[in-house]
Length: 257
Image (tube, rainbow, N blue to C red):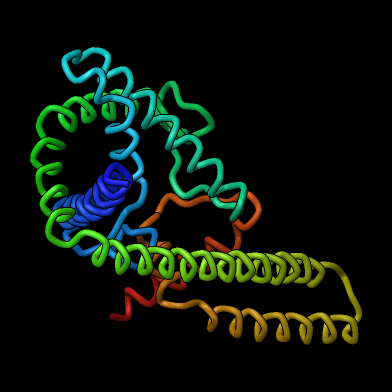
């Protein structure tokens, strides 16, 4: 049971530290705060999962830098590959894309970042995890099950809320994509040599579609806007028009502010 608590608290700590790292990075590079957390809370689960897997699988190689590097690069790449694939399979959207990088696999992973992950795994195992482990053991000794129960309940609630939000986002993408496609094809009909009566019907349909589109846009929550800002390279072949339209809306809002 102690091992479980150790891994859980390690996951939470590293997920939070990963979130801090992402926020600080974007403050320096983009001069603004961007909540890169996938969940509502201030954590990036992929950092926590990676850290826990590093601890489980790389601790046995603690005195071999080469094996830590190779193992870390492999583990992190597998995590990124599986996460990227699942996100696209579940939500028809690619949240990051390394297609422009050399030696990539379907844009989910690439050699450059695998090497970076390998180097970071060495730094992690030799310099970061030892002091963080001492913090974890301190938390376990002084707060134990009480803090665990609170954090675990909060994590489950956060995951449920996030999944519901993403399901709603996917539904919104689908509806908006259908409206935009119909609007596009209907606009094309207006270019043909039609009678005045037919043109009036088509224009009426376009006005109706425009009204439906505005109502769909009104359903976009602040959370959805945060996600699109946090993942500016998100792509989707199935919902390309919808994503582009929402991004334009966000840009117009930013220009008015």
